[in-house]
Image 1 (tube, rainbow, N blue to C red):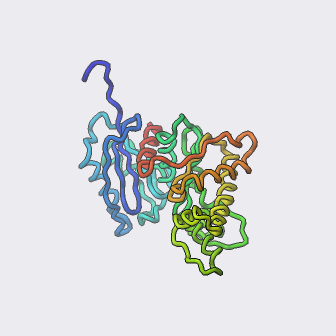
Image 2: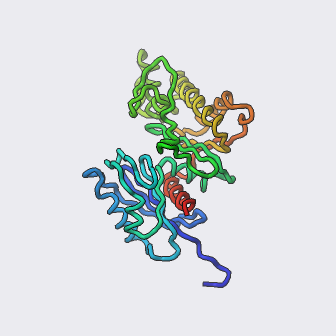
Image 3: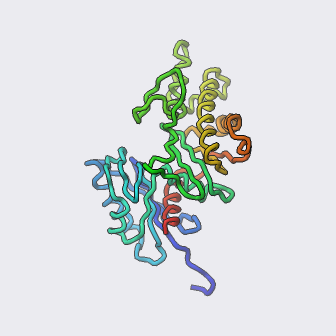
Length: 311
């Protein structure tokens, strides 16, 4: 090695999903040096998942190299002290992910909820300016998110911090959430919630029902009254919830991810305006709201960031 050159520390990022497990070798400056993935084997309650992860890491990297300093893992479930307490999509009950990987791979391992990992990834590599306080909201089939305060995830005493989708909504309707409660935020502001709202509005008309959120935004761009009303109702509901959070934690940045965010300015611009109508005066207009930028890399990057913080 030439004098004056230094070798970057490297980490392994793992993002466990219900369909695919994504891996990456990430340098401590955030550069992704290698990526690969395997299918998630959820048969027999996911009992083969951890062995498959270990085999894949052993095959793809020299984990004994001194450049490798740790592993970060994002998982779709609550995490307490390195243990995944439950991961329904994987078929897991309590699973000691940290201990299993440390024993098999010999590298210090940090485990974090997958939505929290995405939040950390956006904080570390998605923001243009240095950010320490961030609210991440993902709008897909459901509504998830993560809260970062002073650069660290707010996990909560029951590992349920950042469960934004389950903020209660006041409504004359009754929509049953997957968690069992009535009128959670995600029943109104997720893609599924938007579809329900739109189809309720047009049920007494001859208009064709919508099947996805993209159809709603496409119709709104063509000045469809019902689509525009659906978006307005969704934004009003979401903005009220987000304002409540930011009035509590006062973040520098709000990041919106998931499929609904792909609509872009037709959704994000009026959302920011509506949030500002509810924001505390010192917070109003003093935060950045943007679309998530890291895509499928957010989880592995955030998992690595968690690993770096845990050293």
